[in-house]
Each structure stands twice: as C-alpha cells, then as structure tokens.
Image 1 (spheres, rainbow, N blue to C red):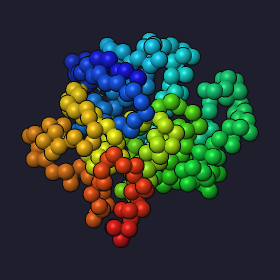
Image 2: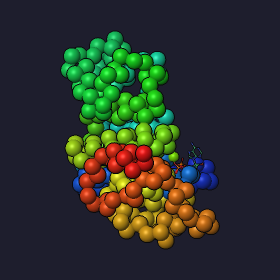
Image 3: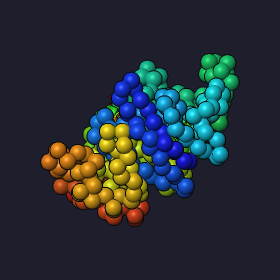
Image 4: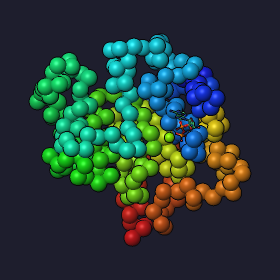
Length: 280
Ligand SMILES: Nc1ncnc2c1ncn2[C@@H]1O[C@H](COP(=O)(O)OP(=O)(O)O)[C@@H](O)[C@H]1O
Ligand SMILES: [Mg+2]
C-alpha cells in the first residue's frame, strides 16, 4: 500500500496534511500523536469511511479512493476496522456479532434473512476461540466487559478475512490489563496471519512495546516515521508538543511497576503475563 499526499480539510481546518508513506511488507505500525493530531481522520480515509480532500491510496496498482459501490465495500472488507467503542450490536449475542463480519460476503437478501451457513458459524467460533472468549459466544455483547467486547470486535474483523487491520485507539477505553490482552491479540494477528496492522495509539509506550514502525503525527503533519527504537525523547517531545514539559509516564498505560518495554525487534511473548507477574 502506498499512501500519497493524503489530505483532509474540514472547512479551514487541515486535519491531515499531505501525508505519504509506503507499506511494502506486513508490518505492525503505530500511529501516535496528541488528540486532534489527525490520526483517526487518516485511518478513516484509508478505510474509505471519510472522503479525502486530495491524495491517493494505491493498492495493487489502483487508487482505492476512487472505488465506488461494490468495489468500495470489498475494500472496506479487506481493511477491517476496529474502533475505540467496539461498535458491536449490543443486544445481539456475541456469535451473531462476529458472524456479521461475514455479511458482505453474501448477497443482501441472504444477509437480511441471517442465512449464515455452517461455514460462517465455524469460522466465527474459531475466531472467538483464538481470542479466548468462545465461552461467551451466546451472551449478549452488552453483557461483556470492555476488554471482552473489543476481543469480539477483533474476532468479527478476523471473520472478514481482511488483508489489513486498522485499529483506531483500540485500547483507549480499557483498563491496563484488558489493554494488554487486546494489544497481544493484534500483535498475534500481525505475526501469525502476516497481516499489516495499523493502530492509532495515543500512548508512546504501547507503540514502543508492540509496533515495529511508528508514525508520529502533529497537527495533521507526519513528523516521524521510523522504527520504534529510533523514537528518541527529543522526537517524542516534537510529536507531543515542546510546549508541554514532556513526561513519558503521563502517556503510559503500563501497570504500576511493569517492566520497561523490551526491544521492539523481538517478538513479544505475552507481555500481559510478564506485567501481571511484576505488578502483583
Ligand atoms: N467531522 C469533522 N468535522 C470537522 N472537523 C473534524 C471532523 N473530524 C475531525 N475534525 C478535526 O480534524 C482534526 C483531526 O481530528 P482527528 O483525526 O479526530 O484527530 P485524532 O484522531 O488524532 O484525535 C481535529 O482538529 C478535529 O477537530
Ligand atoms: Mg482519534
């Protein structure tokens, strides 16, 4: 995927200012920046939820921003989106919520009649099993904890069989323990399924722990693009704003007493468990 000079203006506000970057091979990318930096707008343009003012998003030689109708929906299925507020159907059971990820693989009539096949059910159960919540399959989504609901959303994304996963602040509403479980799941999708995962995060340490590549945004501009190790305190200050006395602990979601992030190059073996052990 090649993002080329992607720009979004809301009236006189330039939310995203001519951002370009290329993803050649599957990566786990963290987009960081303060609230209002343009992170959500960038992801929403890539997913085609928000039209861009200008620029292109090239995938397999076509600009996906020009796609319409069925082709556009196919693209939205290809890049599954995960949201801060989970976006589940609260009164539906977990299994049905996950199977909704199969929806645009079927005709609308079949979808309306909820004609999910045995294959859809098997896929949904498998995804729930992978995320460790298959025992919740028949509960209403609204009866689950936030962390469990976000795992349902990830399971739904997986049943879409996406080529890429876009996550907009997936852990911003979660407690630190649930946050780690959710980030572990996203990391595993990157490593095991070989998918690119692009994750908006407002906390630096999460990006350092989980992402190979970090893109830093400030007031709509990309001010950093590189490996997590290259993100110096000076760079972080640049991203989060020099006018603020920068204290990394303020942007941290770590449990008290958690170990510092290991080198970002090594695969992360269940950081949740490490942190639990240290924290208790
Ligand atoms: N629908 C909208 N209408 C008008 N302005 C918007 C809209 N969405 C976002 N913005 C503005 O665009 C800028 C970037 O917002 P956003 O992408 O939500 O940032 P972030 O996700 O980094 O917090 C902000 O100034 C925000 O107020
Ligand atoms: Mg946002």
